[in-house]
Image 1 (cartoon, rainbow, N blue to C red):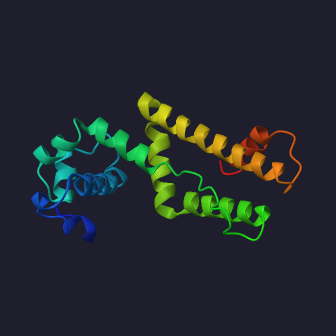
Image 2 (cartoon, helix red, strand yellow):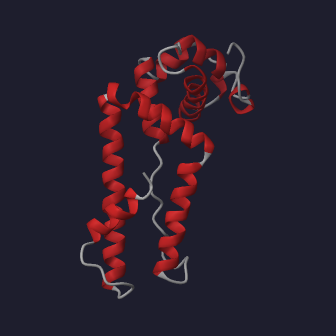
Image 3 (cartoon, rainbow, N blue to C red):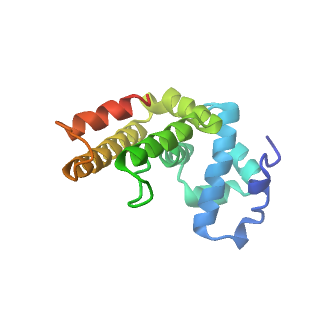
Length: 174
């Protein structure tokens, strides 16, 4: 892993010419490649620096530790439920179908499957990530429940409990 793995990351050199946001994005991309290839324990900051074509000093200016970098990667890569945009679909049922299909496609993307396995393998040892994943899941469920209740209020369907319906729909994905 001494040379940059992806063309996108290797184009980033030198790191001085890019902004903080882009530097962070490229470091997360490099870290993703290395963590997936080697796992958390075997990965070093030097490995990530080499792939990112940046110095370890640059990495430590953005992330205080390997743990913080890994946490940021896991939090950044958790797939969220995309709520439908108003007026984009013919009916609420079509919007719900499109939303769940997009969510399923995102979850089943081969790279997302790999990252999900990486997250699940390390979630127990990183409480902050566990809390962040739980928070994102709860927010997605609440957003979906609000949308379902709103649609029910407009007569799209009969729904006794929007929160329960949202839980059931999201549980299908896991």
